[in-house]
View 1: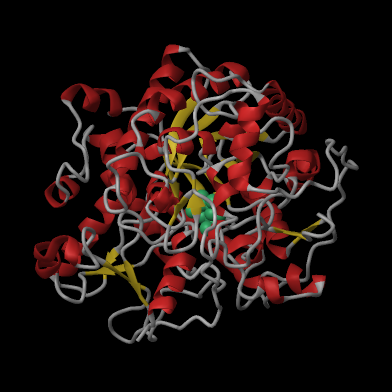
View 2: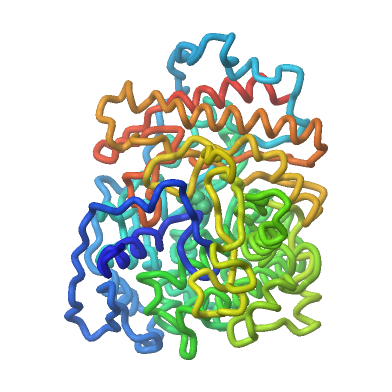
Length: 602
Ligand code: BGC
């Protein structure tokens, strides 16, 4: 039995995680074969002393609407005061890297060839199609640091990372990788590996510190990304830009509640237009939103759950957010097309449809349908196939939760993406909830599994074998499920057919990596390497044997970075970052990727 504090602790820790944040929209219950492990970490629940809105977790934020629009330096200071003191970076100019970057000699083979191939020898009869993109991912908040430099406004994550108990290791991303000033080194290092593209995100609050359509553009922010894009092009690394990777300008949350208010739509479209105009012709592949489902789940979680527009509450927030966000997406894509921006645009879906846990159980089959609808269909159905929410969502959620679209809105939303993008880290078994599907549905909001009414099972129903090797404890949602990849992609392509799919994120947190101190141990990221090589081999089979039109693979992540609610201590990078010296080191996985793609790209 959890005590109340333990429950709160669990909630706090899970709520800011990435791919499966706990909230109504974001994640059904996950059941592991063991009993839930109890956490030994402790949390201090502090009593807020300011006049700002307090909540039981101890976070505080000015009442939404209480800060008036003041686009002067004083107004900006007022916003930064909501965040509090920020750590300054050790230097504030862009570093010129030493080039050419010399790769270290390749690591010794991991296993004898009778057990596993070297990366270059994996499925050596198969190549990726011409034009296939091999890329690495980052996101602004997670890597840039320099959080208060060059005119940037605060984002909601600058604020969230300071709220009591919000970040597992109490770190902030004030400095993180300092990629803001070290991007040239990062680009040069991945170019040396043979990486063809970098999928990064632009910080809205750097372009528009106050966020709104009527507020001033920060020219330093515009110039920064212009330089960064040019450096990519010069280095032969294609720049691929995401407009929004969860870092809402704090101003917009303070003025009207961010994505829980319909006011966000025009402001986002204005921001998108500003960015499109600035970088048209240099960036050719664009994403509006990263994983909107996870983002709207986060909005419902601590500490964001005290920052809502009037009339919105924790239960309705994810759906109000989804409704506003999808309009913002469609509006931005409409602008992209009207402005004749060169290139292609989509958004990044995430997660998986799932496999029934028990064969021949109609409830588990129905639970899989629910999982697919809530996790991917929520945005993919309206945008790719119907213009409308999945029927399962409409049947479950009344309009007070999930606002309905008009016919005109449906027409604007349908077709607002040029290709499919999926952050496909894993795929797992799905069952009906323990109480049964019908019971869950008829219990309604009083049932902890409602509205999804499905359960993720990380082990099979026969002998309780795990779906795959587990990642680090900081990413409890992640197992190496590469063996399910082909089925997962078939299901995605069958439900939301498109001419082209990019697998826009996948990656692995090597267990115990952060506990290791010697560099030679850290560099030996065997589980991550196994995950990536297995996964990329399955991708070759998916393309050649299942004829799934995958044309890009992007690995999360280029460098270790700030893993949201887990902070800096959960590491996803194929390069190690020493957060004291900011030095980067290639791990085995980086060199394995280099060898693999050298042999498999044409
Ligand atoms: C997100 C990243 C995150 C990664 C690992 C993805 O869901 O887009 O920002 O760091 O998962 O959790």
